[in-house]
Length: 399
Ligand code: FEO
Image (cartoon, rainbow, N blue to C red; front, side):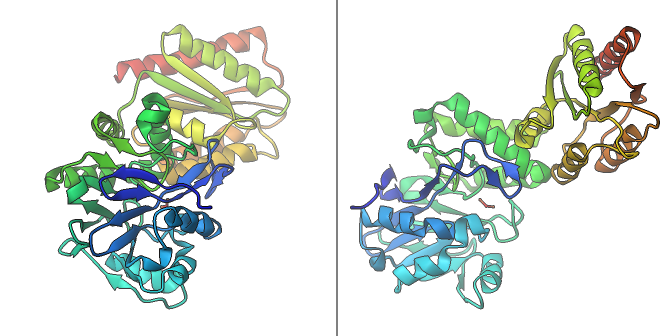
């Protein structure tokens, strides 16, 4: 018995793997799991497998291919991207396809040598066309979207783009198309993926989209390597969503994120959020001890300010806040303001540390931090509300 393959477009079938239980993707949470998509492109003379899967999912990939054909009859393996979620299974896949030639971008060829103990494969680039017989493969190297080796593959006869990570989302589901699981959920997951992986390279992503649009390639299907596939009208919505995200569009919205020891910073955070909301500004509040950084970062992406709170422990901030600041230094949300707050016992220090890190990351800090000793009094809570409200006003002034 084989696991099922799923038709994607004329001559192209999905044969990937569903990682239902993945909850950590290289350090950030994936509450809905993910998929590692791979596609069979069948011409009259040759069959190509575009992308492979993570090592532990090779059997699933081979089983889905067997739903259509004997994997041993595959002629070509295209490696769009060498990151291990797509390519750690390459050696095992090649063992099941002994006659297959393997191609990758020039950067991919160099990476495969190192990842796979000296394995040498062929390079393809923008000038190459591989004719499978009535189906042709064209390639568009996309260096740094998001690795040096990244590449898109296009099948003109099926009007299908296989862009690997671009346009992907971490979402495990039995359905393969965005319109089947619903566009709202699909676009939400697209945004969460973008916020956590692509935000720091927004300019390159914008150029990549421009390059595809300028190529004149007709698109009826865009089939990424994670999550659901976009077809028909969904493609325009996805390109529009990428346009908004790469332009760093924001709303009148503030994120309050904090960690607390004995509840004082928690009470302050709630008062601050209330002060923001009272000004008519959208606010979301996250206790970092119980929140997913992937969701906080998604909310931060279209916000104009981050208000970060920590009490002082051993003269500094709590480790969850330090950890999140380290995460933010990687994803680099552009063009935002920040403020810091927190309670302390006998010596302060957390807000100073947080201020330093936020400035380093590139946040603008227009207002002084808000600190308070031990348990906040009614007056101090009112001051915290006002402190939150001033950020809401600042954000409005800059809209
Ligand atoms: Fe899905 Fe960059 O790997």
